[in-house]
Length: 219
Image (cartoon, rainbow, N blue to C red; front, side, top):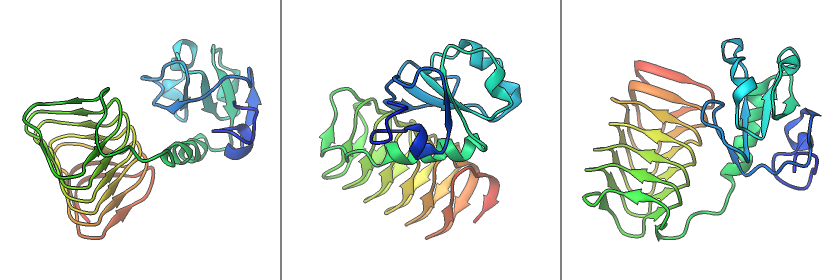
C-alpha cells in the first residue's frame, strides 16, 4: 500500500507526502489518460489538470499547486512529479522476468517471426509481420506494431510502444518508452523510461536516459 514503506511505491520510497487513502494497493503505473483502478499515474503539466477530476487511477503524483484540485484518487505530493514517477516506474521494472514462451494473455499475430527462447509476458500485443530475435524478453503491457524488427538478446520493458521501427541486438528499451515510426536503433543501445523517439537513428552503444525526446536526429 501507499503508506507501507516495505511494499511497492510507498510514499517513503518515492519521497512524497500522502493526501488521501493510504491503504490503496498499486499494481501498475500508467499515463493519466489511460490509467485504471490499481494504477499510479502523475500530473506534471497544468494543461492536463482537468484529467484529475475524472481519472480512474487509484493514486496520482502531483506538485503542491495541483494538490488543491478535486480528484477521486489518493494524492502523492512531490516537489518534482516527473522524478517521483520515474522512481515508481523503476520499482515496477524490477519485476520478475517473464518465462520463455508467449503468455496466454498476449496477442501475437500469426505471421510474427520469433527466434529461439523468446519470452513474452502478459498483455503484450505484437502486430503482423513483426520479428523478435532469439532470447529477447518482452515485459507486460508492451505494444510492438506491425513490421517492427527487434534483434536478438533485447529487453523491452513494460508499457513501451514500438511502431514501424528497428531495434538492434542487445538493446534495452523502456519502461514506458515510445519509439515512433522511423526510429532505427543500432546494437547495444539503451533508451530509458519515458524516452520518445521519432525519425531518429541511435548509433551503436548510445544511450538516452529518462524523460528525453529525440526527433529527426542522429545520435
